[in-house]
Length: 108
Image (cartoon, rainbow, N blue to C red; front, side, top):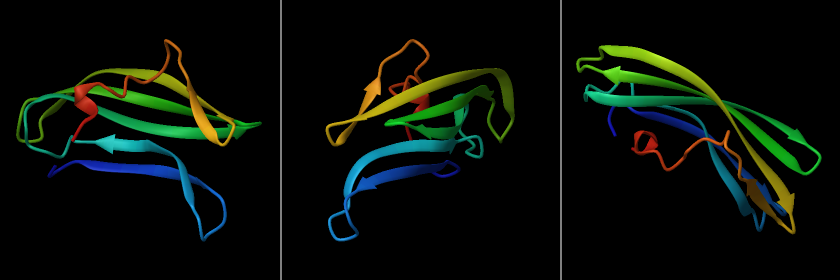
């Protein structure tokens, strides 16, 4: 979508020949530059890698877009998502502090 930006990381296993993708994660997303009005949500994440666990700490910022790039800040939340590496795959550890990646404001 025009005026929207997304960055992320991908984690692969294996050598350079096979490159099996294990995980994709959005580390930054914003549609504040788009001119469409409505609710907007931006995300920015950092990550830590520990023993067989990767933890993403995500700052979510909520806005009401009035149109013409007039974005009014509402609130900030901090969420954490943990993924444990088991048997060749990352398993998302469900918790009340996870980001709701099904939120329609995160789609574009």
